[in-house]
Image 1 (tube, rainbow, N blue to C red):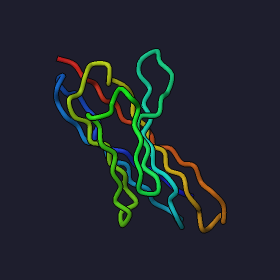
Image 2: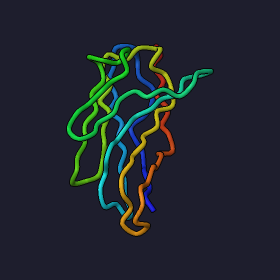
Image 3: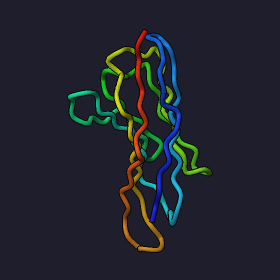
Image 4: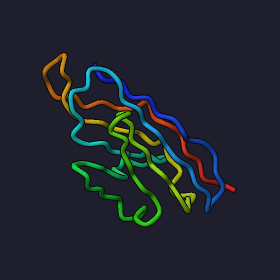
Length: 120
């Protein structure tokens, strides 16, 4: 079983920065991809950023402001969020996919979510 623990959310003023972290633990053999999603009030969940095989992709509205990274030794992904806007307010979820060596099967695990509020 693979567990994810997120941290780093909070309240920030417009133009400010936050860094989210998501640490994966458990019976991890390999990680294919690490992703960040968000769900704003009254909105559907959307994919914000993904890092896989050394490449990254971003939601258009966050390009140039958010940076996703990964520490392979720690099985951790980070989302550095700069120049935050009120419309970035949402619950942010990490998602990690890979191979579970105990189950000998793919896993698709989700973090518990962390609230990011951008407001003056």
